[in-house]
Length: 228
View (cartoon, one colour):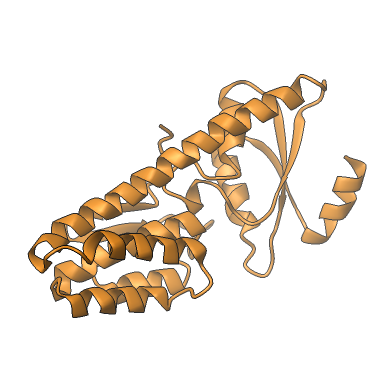
């Protein structure tokens, strides 16, 4: 399984450690999340970003809330409501919260805390395994494309869909990392992705991994696609 250079999310006893992505690419620091409000703020303010990572962080946020506030129905519903309001359109967020609710609601309050931590960890591990699978299947496609040409494969990315956005290797970048490990020549054109400039995070990832890349203005994407 892909090992993240810096874990984007991990449990440290009764608190969470996340890579503070508001400081990237200039500083690499972890933020400590100790309360439900801390987790909600981290998601809302984009300390944690990327759909899969948001979902996993929210799942751990539910467990953390039950740790702090008790595990009765009222506390569970409060945690789900607070976290669900952080990013109303985030699909993975609401998927993860629904999965936590489904796993915990039928249990007695005394059983919920341990089950919450276990389910959150299962969500984190599921995402890491999904990223690995994306990398494997994507590598098959890239190998087939590489066999038809002599120059490096040219791939364009938008936003950031690497390990920073997940609990594993990433989604769109997972096949690129797999291709590099397999010895395929790859060149990545990274769109800056305004207004948040999340392409800078992709460029930061690729540079650290030694993958050839060029950061481009969003408006240059059409021209590059036309020229192949």
